[in-house]
Length: 119
Length: 417
Image 1 (cartoon, helix red, strand yellow):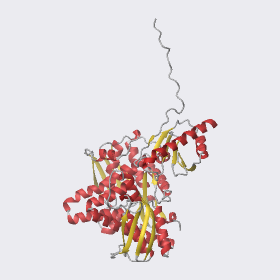
Image 2 (cartoon, one colour; image 1 turned 90 degrees about the horizontal axis):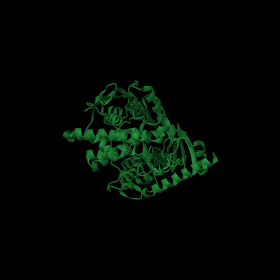
Image 3 (tube, each protein chain N blue to C red; image 1 turned 90 degrees about the vertical axis):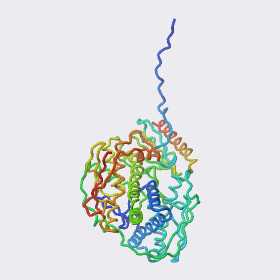
Image 4 (cartoon, each protein chain N blue to C red; image 1 turned 45 degrees about the vertical axis):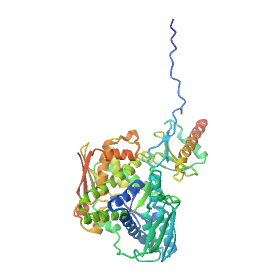
């Protein structure tokens, strides 16, 4: 008797399973990084959470939201596409830029989960 | 008077002025390539001399006008305002210790030295300082602060970020004096440009250019006097500098080594290609562009329209698309640009086309629009540039009409090979 395995459905992915930090299109060494969030993200709540984390909201530019950290690093968000650019300040030495980008990335993810909990 | 109040926009011509002197925006890739081009044409020593002199002349024009318009009369006021203007332009922040006999200037952050170190520092060792623009600016500031004649002060950089020093340092000493030339100001520019005419996709191009001009009005140097935007370092810069260096270099080669003129002209054209690839490319791929205009479609006609709008938005003049046949032919026209008014004012009627920058830019626009897969989010690396522009030639460009020759507009025809 052959017992076939029950058909399996793909397990639903966690909503942010695909989040990753990668180099953004940039000609300057390791200064611009990127992650992409689901378009369905609650962008308003995310913005509030970033402000709650100490970032300062800059004037929007068309559909672009921008948040400035005290370090001079910046988070730029395009809700229409989910593109998020993490900009490390140019005074950060090149060998430390990846770590600075990772700290920004973690800050965005923390803000994202904070926004999720509140929504 | 705040520096922003010294700005003026001739909106219909897409030309920008600071204290009545033309300025445009260029990124560090272009600025470094431009300077290298001059040195390649003339050799390092003569190249550095011509670049410093051109910066000296260009900033003297700007600062003399800025001091007059803002009522800066004392040396302290003038030195302070000059430093603020330089930093506002994204050229860096320079501090002075000067008298009427010269002195010193220093900076931890100058555009050229800093950007050179960022771009090449880990791969290339440089022996010569990179900040001829700051040296010329410093000499002009020292002279005008004390109402001295042009070239009463000479300036040399002896420490530089690009040569791995911690700061840039300059020595200002009494100079030899040379002839002053009339400023190429707004009134001069107006004499040599034509009324704008519409091109293909005019409404869309005009709307995007207007938004970009407005965005650029908010761009200014940070506390270090640098501007990081669109993933590049940006400067508000003086066409007087670019033009004097280019035309003095080309004229010198025409006088001394005529056989090399085609090669030198090709170098000057390539600077336009570098600008479109790096500056335009990074603008197009930036979140700011996506926020203002939307994601890139990659459709060639869109990309050409966008590039034309960027040229206008950076203050390069009223460029327009006159004709386009996919993969075969592109005709760009300009009723104003930043090269030809300078040529007419300084050298008179040209005997041949002289708008090298737009020649290279037109070819690059065709190549980028037809070849680059923009929706794949390409990395605009040096390797990609070489692959695109130095591989098998796909297009050639010819400037068929030229305002510097007295014609009513300039025309650049790109044909497939």
